[in-house]
Length: 213
Image 1 (cartoon, rainbow, N blue to C red):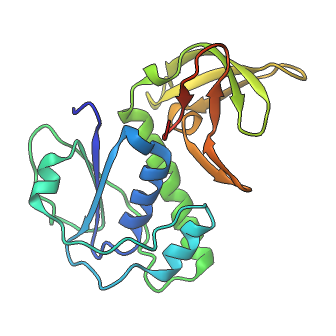
Image 2 (image 1 turned 120 degrees about the vertical axis):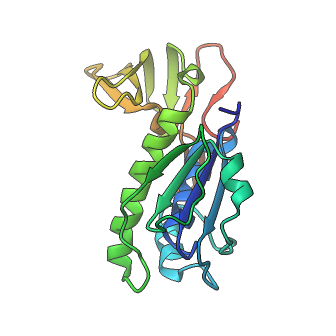
């Protein structure tokens, strides 16, 4: 795998599912991943309902343009995620291939597309958690973007999914313990006027824990 893994998202028209997935991967992964997308039969424009659904998450995909799937992009990628495009994607040894069964948002209303969007977000978070190294987070004190401080106890793998997870303890109130996927812990957040990493290390390490240091 490359030092910065490349993910390719592929669907038929490259106008909905793959563009939403690419949007999440860029927002959650930041500079830690390279993101590509393409379609076996690219459409003429991005699905406007998908654009609206992603805008609710603070992610702007209005500038995306449907692209024809390129064999070179498959060859350059570490992970290739297909979504209903059958056998259109060439197979190269050493690549990670996954086929995500997702409803096509074409012709669907906003409520239906929100459900598809949320499923894509979960899958992208899990994918990033499996591709990115756990070394980005180490034990120490971190501040959540809403102000609370926490102590990271350890970074481990979920025994069932093998997804990297972060175990951390609140430094306020009843000092409860929390478990969050590594991808979610290090995600870049755009919410309520704030844009930045979900957690920032505050115990003497000036590095930002998130997608865009």
